[in-house]
Length: 267
Image (cartoon, rainbow, N blue to C red; front, side, top):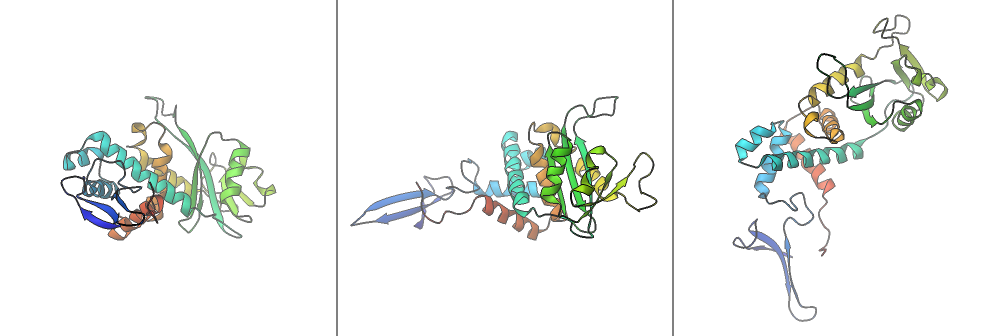
């Protein structure tokens, strides 16, 4: 196929075209956007890339709407498409953490709106997470129930055998020593660091605070999309929240992974 200019006919001014005479004669045209990041959008490719770059740069929805003169719902949709890329990348990049003599702090936290005057979440999602101390390694998973069985299933999936797991004294974690892990507990009702073992969960507790700050202005606007916002946080965290051109190129590579170029023409 060859790139063919058709400015008066197609949105982007160009299309792919394959013409052949004689045996198996054909004249086939394909959009530049076919099966790509730009598919099914009425925005120009330039505007799509500008919205993408502004999402990457942590611009607020209203700013992008005013700056690019776009419909607010269009901007919201494209921001969510960007988070879908993050979700796919986070899944592809997920690796187990911990190992023999490696400390993993685990904890669970509820994310949701606070009831006015009560200070307690009434609705939201339970997130179970773990941090490998001394590295950027982590896992975070939304869980339906905080049962021993469900949390243990997540731990076995993401924490290597032989790891030293530090947690609070919640009864669901009591079985960890029987599951191939060394288990240390911190009684937060008494202290934040165990005076005998030195065990603490400062890393995971600090991460909860960071996640909640990141999500504070987002989760109320997208019912059922909590996983996407969490994925965005994890993707950015794994890049040290960098806004460099190199990190943006890394995001575009993740876009290509989710929307791989076609190796041959498909109807």
